[in-house]
Image 1 (spheres, one colour):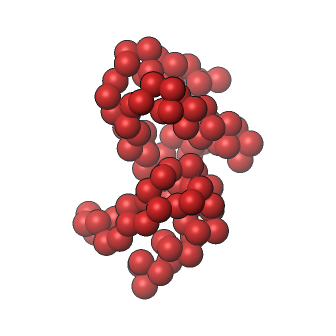
Image 2 (tube, helix red, strand yellow):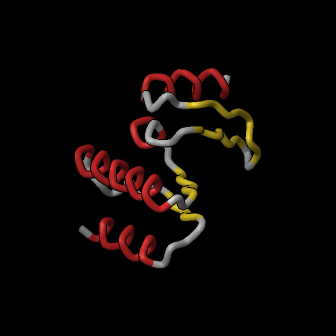
Length: 96
């Protein structure tokens, strides 16, 4: 519930960009999926860009594009196709 409230507050301000650092870290899988669906819906409805940081392929798959950081530098980027398996495979390939 706190996550939903935080999203509502953030979007009520009509920002151009939202930064979210591990926003689903303390949520179970169903709640994380609901959070991502809500974030995606609001992004499409309001047009705000979202920069989301996550280690979870399920969460990263909600993004259109994933950028991979290693030692503070972008070492790869790819389109997700909104598929967690694609995220996992590309992530491992780019870190190898």
